[in-house]
Length: 266
Length: 172
Length: 52
Image (cartoon, rainbow over the protein chains, first blue to last red):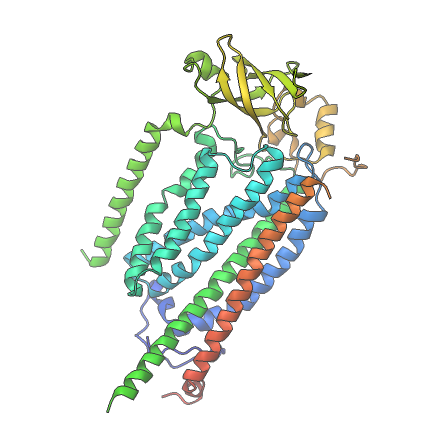
């Protein structure tokens, strides 16, 4: 694996790395990952910028106000995508942790490590925009109801994961500890999702549900879905670029170590 | 059994244990996880006197009376209902913008000996429907919905997934 | 600007600013790693032309 190449060009590289195994481990080869992700990343970034470039102005200027909330309803277009990313991203973290714990997939370790700070940012933004929305509408910045509290717990789980995987000198051990924490914390995801249905909360129930018509009028729904897609693409592009950087940094460390050993040798 | 499948089974067992433990804990603490109690809850099980709690429900139609308290602060009297039961509430202070008849509210306060709930805080609780003013007006005009009577009708009856008719927007 | 618009603007600014800062940090980190790697391992590009 150490001899992986980092070129991002299209030509196939002769990699004397571990013999390619089937299944998931096909993508464990860092050289192949860098090559493939290098081709995907520009497109992902361009798509994110394009979709957000349409969705954000649409929500801010070209969508109607709500009949009772007025212009404040526009916070929806940034708050709800952040909430989706906070939860969907955590589901991704749990999936990566399973890959990391059971299949010992080396790329899953790195991806989880790079995912958690981005997820923490999305969750923090979800809490902050929710607070900015709650003050004019509910009349309070914060209440300890089941939804808000469980999202705060989700934020601490993201932060805890980001800190824990970086707390060990042995990166593999850190990744394993982080994966265990992520999987224990995964019980919180259904609690966040269903808190508004299971208990009385100040937060209203979900508007966009799989069953039944959305409680959002289409003039509000379409810009929301556009922003949701745009932020999801941006989130994915950020995580992919961070994972690429981490793969390259690992390779740099290996090269530096090898150079130091050569210098020491008589 | 390979090491990989042993790890898989171990993880599944842990997930099962953790999941059931969480479910049991949440069921046990059900009462504490509830943010507010409804008038029916109060009728079923009267709260201890002088203990602050949150009361939530809809503001009953035609029950809102706004006065000025002796010290010059605005005072509001209204009833919070959940259909089956209602509780009279008094509140001195500024009500949130969204407060109106038919709107959901959550109030924090104490139940007096006369059965009146003296609120020290009133929060508005809106529902999960969002629609442009034109659509709301159309629903009101057609008699499908009176916001003072409660929540909007089910989304399936009005969300035709078509843009709102272009109408001159009222000034806000 | 009414209070409502202030809250809307603050929300948009927070979210766009947060993502933008993270994007800039990621781009610079990615570029630095790429540059350092090319510096440490110049053979990588040569190996592509003459398979070992």
